[in-house]
Length: 239
Image (cartoon, rainbow, N blue to C red; front, side):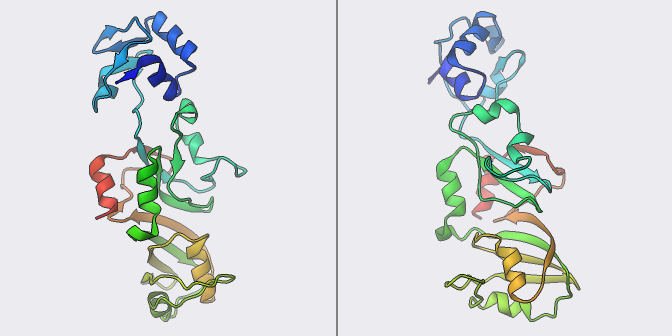
């Protein structure tokens, strides 16, 4: 159970005073009935978003919330980096949600594809923890032709990145064309994919993440689009 004013304030609808004003103006309904008490206790049932409306629109999903986004190029994954961020693709009030939303790992502004955003700290750490070995797959376009030796180099677990002292975990490279490949990694080091190809004398010209674990980027999710990730889809990440 949660107090209505605290629930709506945590979802970014305004301060508790502003939420109280919404209630006073008969702007909050549950099962079609106007709620008149901002201090009313609300059961946080899974179907609450379909039963409650605020200003005539369905309630935003309460925490815990995980989103899947098709990150477009030229947006960043941090509040602190210069430029437009992925958070600007979400409803403005979501920036005031508590707990706050965070990306699960990052894709740089020149990388597109599957991005997860969550307010569930336990789920976030489970995805990024090296103990769980969650695989991330990337489609890579290269500046120079592949010669085939990269497959074994990436797979043997001995490749060292510049300025690092620990070799990379084995990675799987599938060559799709002269300058096109799919790379699956289980780590998340800084700019890892780009640095791996730099280590074998090549340069990444385009990078797109299409899979995390067994969860693929949906075909119907265009660049900049997002939706709530279902529990079943969350399970595919660890399949």
